[in-house]
Amino acid sequence: MPRTDNDTWNLATSVGATATMVAAARAIATKADNPVIEDPFAEPLVRAVGVEFFTRWADGDIDAADVDYHESSWKLGHMPDAMAARTRFFDGFFRDATQAGIRQAVILASGLDARAYRLAWPDDMTVFEIDQPEVIEFKTTTLAGLGAAPKADLRTVAIDLRNDWPTALLDAGLDKSRPTAWIAEGLFGYLPPAAQDALLDNITALSAKGSRLACEATPDRPQIDKERARELLRKASAKWREHGLDLDFTDLGFEGERSDVASHLENLGWRSVGTPMRQLLADNGLGAIPQTDDSVSVADTVYYSSVLAN
Image (tube, rainbow, N blue to C red; front, side, top):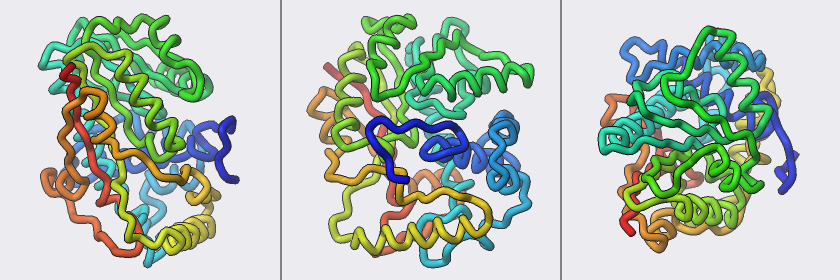
């Protein structure tokens, strides 16, 4: 079912299921022969969600080569390496931010992100997680049941990003007079274009000089045949459905012309450096992901690290 402005989901349905898929990819990456990340919470969280397809994939019972549509540029087979490189990027961002003296972090649409539990945070660090109430409750309860404890002062903010999350974040204790490290991981494509701009505007309004932001965005490629790209994604979704994943990825995002993330941030006073996924893969010794001329590949995604200069 296509997204609407007031739709709801959990970690097994709609856009929420993508968080579980990403966690399954992190679980697979963690078990690689020479892993570049270590996320011990990914696999048990995926099991707890209970989507059989993702559990079997994380366990190695599903071979991505058997379920991927060969012509699609979006393949499950690419995801473990891609999510390993992405995770390493955002982990490194927080490491660098804390080494620079930042002591409050915000994880937007945190999903099954377990960084508050697995990263080596400074003793005086506060981490805020924002996501829908059901998602926050599920992850908090599941991790507590595993005997896991946050390694920072974790403050959960149970609110939909379509609501007044800035007020909720301030009520939870964010000090906007101090620099903050923000991450928006795997988020922009699931927001309407105007909501993407509003999110960046709100982040800026809550940020003191010296704040940092890490995010990702897919560059505009006007030469792409968008209907051809949608058709390939529909065929890929149909192939996954044959194997038990009842999720149509053509319904999860919002179309429309988007602002260029780096330009929008520059206009707000941020200085950004972008690194494409293909470079992150190479830097981590991971295999290249093919790029095509008829659709946007995960390899096209650009990862930005920004600092608020004003």
